Image: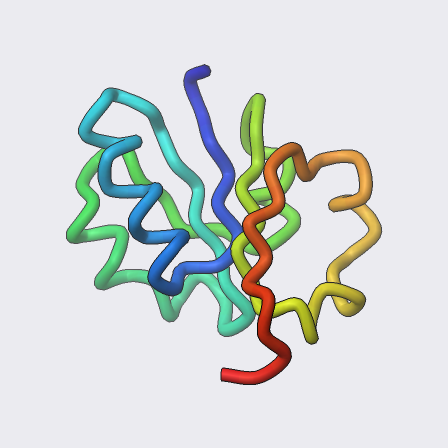
Length: 95
């Protein structure tokens, strides 16, 4: 796998992103606040990381990790119905 899309940049999403980039995998991270809110995380992860929209992360590579609260799952764009291959949705409705 050369690129991994990660939707959700909380504890699980970032815990997956860090070892992924360390292993040479390119990651595209996204959250509900938009790519501009991820500049710090992308800088921390280094040159193998990029921020994108939810749609960009969903279609960025061979796999997509979804790590969001279950209460917002139904608000995801339709592109995710075919793109998500690993759903790590948090089993709580509120944070």
